[in-house]
Length: 106
Image (cartoon, rainbow, N blue to C red; front, side):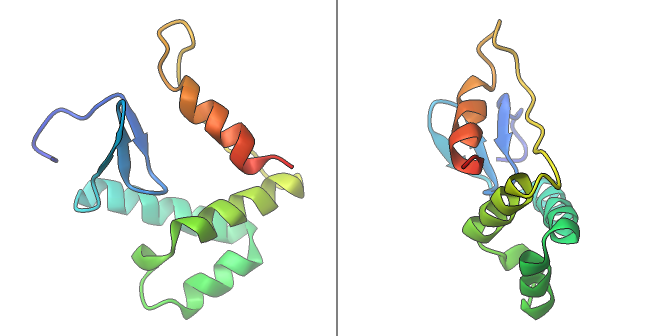
């Protein structure tokens, strides 16, 4: 998949391109690197995820659910805010934004 031009939406946490359906891109080394950077930054703000990272055999193996739970804890404690990019005018990124509002809020 890495040799093709990437679609408009990439979900770094789960390593998926989002078009109309999700597509597994777990072998894309650049996205894996970005996901690892994301996990490190989130772990800097969430002790539970930091502990899991330390105990894990690889930062790449941190489950999606653990990252999402950490993001929710960070938001609920007002320690950070996820940033999502898109354009409602071009209908790019609207659904991931709506999903994030549901996933990470109360």
